[in-house]
Length: 121
Image (cartoon, rainbow, N blue to C red; front, side):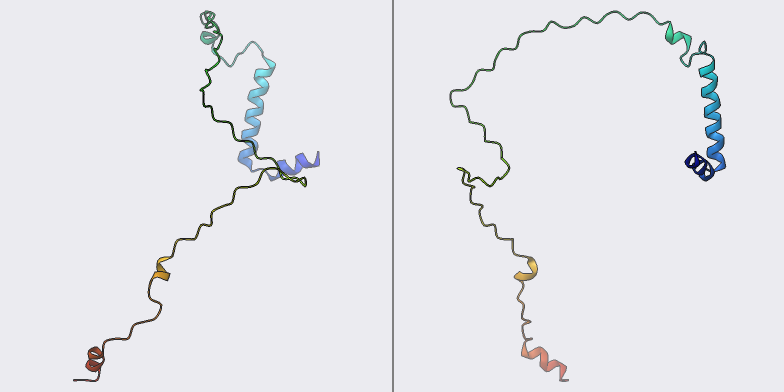
């Protein structure tokens, strides 16, 4: 009961008014079962004809090809017992070279004729 009071006190005034309206509307419909939420036109609609079910045909087994592939064995959780299956070796995949590594890491010296122009020709 304390929890209900705490929750009720935490609600805003708008929430309380909305809850009271919804509760009063619902209680009116519960008290008067002759009032239906569904309009009479929908309730007294034409009876729907029974839907005929399609005849069930027996499924023929699919013909197996002469060279049928064998299904792969499902992976089993590893256990302490030695297994007859040998895991396939994984190929070593080298990472692609990054563009930064392709550039020459050492700066190239500037040509000599450009250095002379700084001296003030």
